Image (cartoon, rainbow over all chains, first blue to last red; front, top):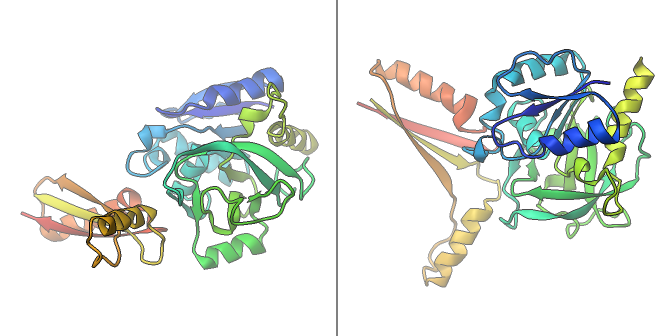
Length: 232
Length: 80
C-alpha cells in the first residue's frame, strides 16, 4: 500500500510518519510537497503534524489553500483515505473536509503529554482493527486542540458515529479532568460522513515503535493497511 | 485605498485569552471590567476601485481566509 505524506513549510512530524510507514510497516511511502498537484497514485494520504506556515492567522488557515489541498479534496471525495494528525487535523477543519474548528486550549498552554483516548467506533479504515471501547495511550502536543462545533453539528457527529476518539481516564471513563484542552464532548478525533477522512489531535506516529514500551499508535496505521488488504 | 478588518470570536464562544486579560486588569484595580474579548485587526492596502467593489472583495476575503466563520465574526471598513 503506497502512502503519500504531505509536507508544508513548517511540517515537523512528516519524517516520523515516514519512518513508521516505511521502516516499521514496510510500506512504500513518499513525501509530497505542498506545491505539487499530483498525488502520484498513492493509496492513502497522511497530513502530518507541525506548524504549517508558522500557524500564521490561524492553525491550518493558510495551508488549506496550498495547491496540493485541491488534489487532496478530490482524492477524499473519491473515497481515498486521508489521515490528519494534529496540525493535519487543523488543516482538514480549515479546509472544510471535517466539520468544526479549533480554539486555543482552555489553559492557554501548549500541552505536551501522554493522554488516554477511548476508541468510539471501528467503522473507519483507521480503527477497523481496533476494538471499540479500547483505550489507547497516545501523546498530544498542541496549543490549539480545543475542538469546537455548534450544538447542531455536535448532534450530527454523534448521530452518525463520527466521533472516533474521546479523551478519557485510564479506565475509559470520560471526565472533565481527563479532557486536556477543553474540547467539546472530550473529542480527540472525528471522521467525515463517508468515514474516509479522519482528523485526530494525538500523535499515533510517536508511539508506534515501542522504544518506550508503548506501541498503541501502531494500531491506527495497521488498521489502514488491513482495511486496504480487505478491499483488494 | 485602505481596508480595516476586525475579526472577533463569536459571542458565546469562550475566549480564554480575554479571560486572562480581564483577570490581569482586575489585579490592576480595574474592577469595572466585566468582560474582555480579544480579536485580530488586519489592515490592507488595496488598489483603487469603486467602494462597492472593494466591500464585495473584502467580504469575500473574510469568508474565505481572514476569518473562520465557524468560530469568528468579522466586520470591516473601507476608506479612501
